[in-house]
Length: 302
Image 1 (tube, rainbow, N blue to C red):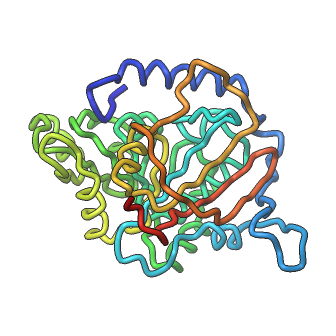
Image 2: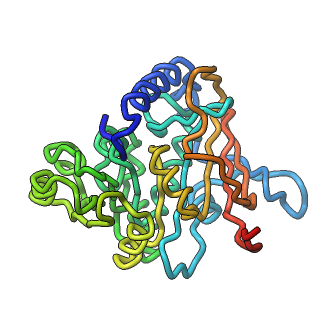
Image 3: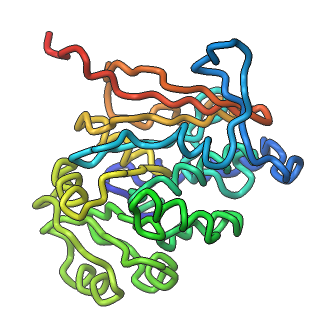
């Protein structure tokens, strides 16, 4: 599996394989509640007390991006087991309940661009608007209508961070794309690979000399008008965003399963301490969805 850096790729690949096998074993039963189309709002509490079921356009409004962003606003979505193991492949393949899939679908619908690492993009079947394992309603005219009403393109773009341009130009990312995919790479990437990706229809953007620079990625997305950024499916890329203090919002879907010891729980490099503010908590079918915003109200200088 291609990764964002040469070091440790074998270990990461083995960890992802174990995650996939373990997560399939503890599937929360996709299909048991096929009629689920809403989730219960737990926080913030209602003024009159109690709770309410949020669905459809109300759910989109609850999860929407802040308005008027002048720069790329980065939202990260992590799907984890109850004991904290990050499921790097996202909501497909039995790894989350319908509510987890519903939330993932909602977040994608709200995004201008889905940002993934080289190890997540091609293997997950990204084809512009949606992932191949999403229900048909996610690609419906209703979804497109809501996007148009928000002033967005009909479908979200997909941007892949591929430091070494190590993507298959014949893969689904390029073959099935509904919009032109973006590939972020570096000046040192092999020229033949870069040329092959450009020939396959990718918009190839250089964002560093020999290492991808996160600020340059965000500058490029801002310049393209793709300010609603959703990062999912790649803990390594999340680590880079976190290391650059570029994460504005963290969404966590916590699934009711245990995967156990021996798997990596922390996808970020080194200790960090960045304050967050809890925005909302939703629940359904045993799944918790928590949304946090980065709290930048206080200086982090010592």
